[in-house]
Image 1: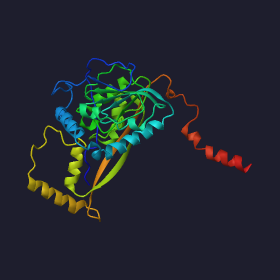
Image 2: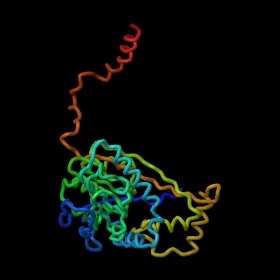
Image 3: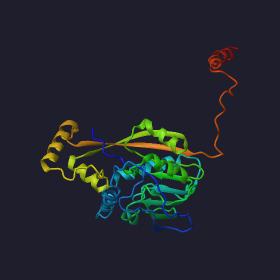
Image 4: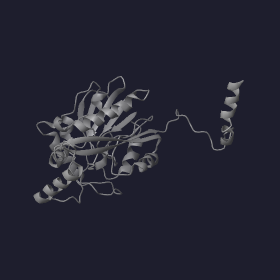
Length: 314
């Protein structure tokens, strides 16, 4: 079953800091590094400049919303998880926001103000409407221009899988949060059992990691490829093939249809979404008891059922 890259990642290296001042929707060009720049310790797998061009191309199409179905769905699922948290967030950050797929599902009772960053300026120019005061900032996920301990909530949807250094990206998000909040919702190319470790290493605690799968049926492989291109999700790896011959593409489409087609003749594509939630440590959080401070052993707990049964009989 095809599992297209679903969709996110992040890193760091600070540009001039942007403070969270007052004001409504506006755009601030900041935080985009020179072409070809990467973190010195990052594996340089993805061409970030090419990814910016791909996302800008997609955002400039006559009907960009035609390809938004996956990002809309995932954005609404992240918003649902924010609503599940019994608190509000005065200041939030959406990293790799695209056209604002998360913010449009939130309201100002939960989020007082939101900063939205993306590497593609045309995505920001066409961002969806929301009643939350919004600041749009042109910034690469690998070079976020914010001071430490700025935000109460940090979210990211379908963006981090194109970042070259995911561990450093998560560390940067942990520094950005000021009282604990929501970590990135991501689906990078990594094993799901490694994600909790990455969050813990970055400074988050009270971790939750789970997986969603969204299956979409397409008429054929070429329609799937067209939609991935329209989403701005074409391959941007440095080692990608510059050209695939038509015969190769036709053969691949035939094999894919033969192996995976549905009864109605369509072909399925399964998008696997990893949800990662973590809180930055804060003094107000409950702390685990010190090792050796227990007053009852696990062996004694085994007797509890007998004691309760006797009590009921009496």
